[in-house]
Image 1 (cartoon, rainbow, N blue to C red):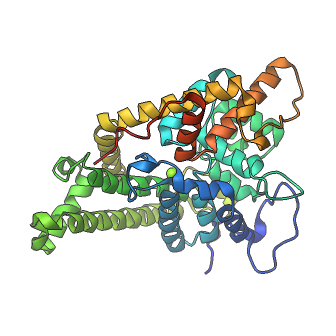
Image 2 (image 1 turned 30 degrees about the vertical axis):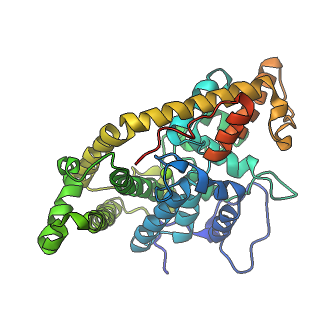
Length: 397
Ligand code: MG
């Protein structure tokens, strides 16, 4: 596969933080992907909530299946744009490694708990997992991934955290948030593939759960145009028993249309900007994008999902319970750090004063909780408080 001049070339990588000899049979980005697939954090994704709590049903997306879908969509688009598929795959598979149990509800609760100790951001945590928390090598912490994979993993970052990253690693992955420059096209693509993936699978999971209906979805043109198109072509899908096939046929067409739109709009943007290197890409405006019409339609879908699914009373109830679990765990481990697994009891050596030591010990608790799967968090909650958390009620249909 020939890469475009603006693609990331593994042989021109900015490299790893700890120098390692090149692999014999794999490119540096293939090697990153393999390290991610073999990591403990990756295996935990299967038991972490995407939207529906992990125990609410076996067919709902989890963070793992979501990440696989992002990788699939990303690779398809990357191939058409002559971008580096291996880098896209590595970033996509790692992009959610830092997610807490219980999805965004868990992250918000942990961020609240950490407010006085530097906060908690899941993108930053994904980077922390691959840079520090994975323990797999004798010579260094983390997975020692290439700059380009780490750059893609750090999708967002607050200014304050970017400054801290820049202090630790001058010219590293924090710099672009201070300079307001862009990441590689492969990173930009993963960002959009993430959005395309969750918009489609949240419709699927939402309809499966019974919390949203095809009738409600008629207000979303991006979906409903394809539902009508499918009905025109296959009139027997009007039969009530064919709802699932109708849903998937509409979703399939919606996904294809979005993929084709990104390829067309990004190709135009690339032709216009004509970047001749990754460095030129970083200095240009964002180039992987939807066309204006698709962007607007996607916003309508997102607004629909926010209102009808993410803020559905039943989802909010589950998430409220999940937040209480996270808060209770944080308080319990803060009060009694010895309740954490043994490997978390080794406090990091902290330079500085008492405030730094307090922040560092809170960070260890946050790392421990963030790494938990939904079910481990619930078990720990029950063990430490004697209370059942979100495990028994609020089940979805
Ligand atoms: Mg994601």
